[in-house]
Amino acid sequence: MQNIFDLIISFEISEIFLILILVLNILTFLLYVLDKRKAARGKWRISEATLIFFTLAFGGVGAFLGMKLARHKTKHIKFKIAVVFGLIITLVPIVYIVCEFIGRINI
Image (cartoon, rainbow, N blue to C red; front, top):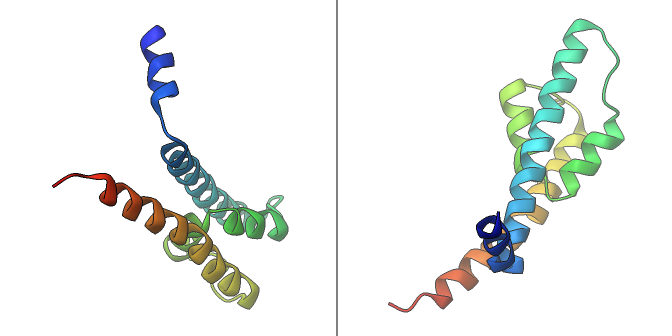
């Protein structure tokens, strides 16, 4: 148990942020797929506001993949716009953290 705690403590804030982004993108992808399944079965749906919120809350990659792979919300202009902004919001910090990490490597 102590080893797990030490591992968690050793993470830097950028690593924690990358894990958070990964989790948010997986969740966002699953929300899009789940909403598509519910739509196909005529069941209660996930609200558009929730989908857009998670898209813009660092879930742009998951939303993009959910739209493309599940073919869901692809004709709605507000989702297309939200995904573009979501991708920017998601990818800019990832690129920054990766560049910062590469800068720390002594070659």
